[in-house]
Length: 248
Image 1 (cartoon, rainbow, N blue to C red):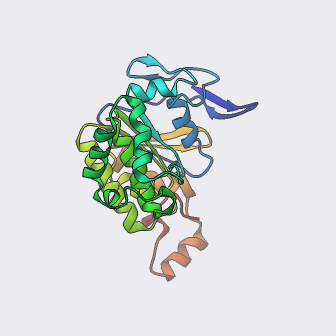
Image 2: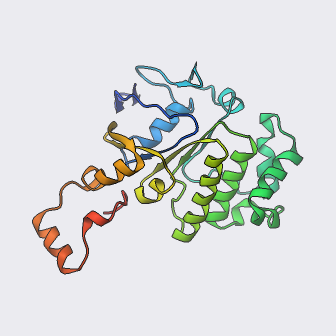
Image 3: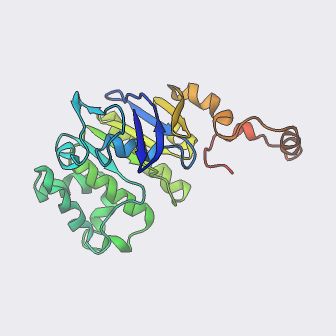
């Protein structure tokens, strides 16, 4: 599959499969093509060559509502909650999938009790972590078959990120297929079974989460130069122990 924005190609001939019931981490630096891959999968944009299939059916650009009803759910980068609506009203938005308001609220509040305490509070007044909880709660309320998360950890404290990914682990245990797009590899790999690394619009490595973790340093940062290695040794650290894709 290839994809472009106007005349600029950004996905250069990739072939990827997200296996049912598996958590897959899609890793790479900014500009690698990760978010574009999710946009293609969700029918937000179409490929310039090749095709996308979800549950055996071809994904057509602009078919996002149909895909949502079939169980595909994307939580985009930046949380995507409606700040002027209350927590409860944000959840009601998901009734388009056919679930009633009471069902949507019950699913959300049982899993995220903190949101129940803030049910009538405007979503824009929640903390960043609580807004991500609300985004997850809305997704879960639709009983998704495939859940795609784009930079869930962005702008959040590590302790909040850990809490959110604990919920992701629970969702996976319930049989939901999850695709996690992250710059910070260690976080994503802690919950993933499979992983792929993207760079410059191409998939440069695939394998189990453990296999991919072993090649992350070279995939993201390249080989350590002698001066860098010396400095790291003097500081009692090594760049090779940091698997975070977001490292400078």
